[in-house]
Image 1 (cartoon, rainbow, N blue to C red):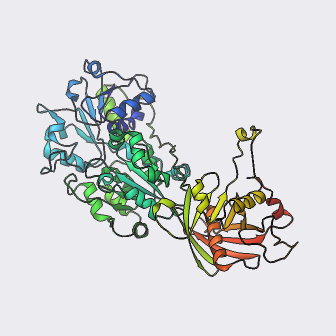
Image 2: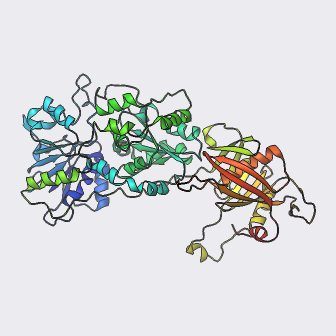
Length: 571
């Protein structure tokens, strides 16, 4: 059998149907590139990477195929021999065919795409919803006679992967943050073309410890620009923590992990809608979107982003205002036969082959865990608001604009300029991997020596924090002495700065997973509290709210015993 591939988008749809023939030695798949697309380069690279058997187009048209499967009706598919199964290359048929702004025929359902000399192109036109079949029957009854509603294999993979949501978020480094996904289609009416500043603005305005931002782009954008140019255009946002999903499988895993989705009129957003994620519309009008289509109806019912208002408040309102079933009910207009698409496809494809289906059920493949990893900002601006014994901390990437507060730098990650301007510098423990254990020249600091070194080296630093564990830090403040007097627990160190201990306990609601708050963020709250209150009598207790989560910090001087031993912990 032959998979006829026109673009990376079409290839991705075809790969989602592979389980239909899995395990059957009677079926030998080969691939060919359909000529005429500007976006075929990435498809060929993906096929090479997968080790797929490919044949050139002239060989493909010579025939010998018992079945041909394609996910785009464009190109000279009529030159191929063998019955053709045509799959949609997106969800919902929401866009007009290019250069047909006065016609509401959807791309993928237009007669000029589906007929060749008045004859239907495909032996089977697989659709995802009965409404699509009805729309097809209005435009081309002859094609509709060969069409059938089978469902959407891509959605079925996302539905089968719902139990992996926590694993996806772990792989993305989301933690307890809210994952905000930005979805953009391609072309002049896309979000990335009309609002290219939005990803970076989200990174700048959303608190780093409360939100993570991911970008999902149409495969044509990846194909058109290439990875190098795309990353170059988005580099400032990447440096501040933006994630970019790859165009096969990874985008679906990211949307499955998301807490909120901002979208233009591209049909991709129908998938997180089907998973009942809160959506915010960013579409600004144009000629591409067909009125009354599933995507048009969805955008008319979800909140709309207002460009000149703060983004964080709009996202908070959309999430708070979302009710279970709100968006999944709207997406139901695009997806039927949920969870059964591969079974329907297998039955019909084997019928065209004249074979009995291979024994056993067809298994939907869950989406793999994402492999992407975003950059951590090299420094952050921490804004601290103190009210009595409670402080609220919000941290932002430095290049996002003035946020007030103090600069937080990380030893070993931040630049020299960032270290020189930081009010708080922290250091995390070195990796204890086997590889590092075999390096005899490995250099470490004790917490006591490193904190003294930092305050001595960087005069602008007010607090040096050694992060020993998620619930314990030791630190020094640039203020000599303290309660206790010489020889007591508050005795200053060699540089006149006493060593203090911070024990962190994060509150957890019963029945909810435990979420660890970054101890460096908590110590930014302690730093701000001490800046405002001076050096109080210790022990003392401070309550820090970071990313909406409340932690209690017990402050003491490092003394003999267990606390004293921590001063010699290696970093």
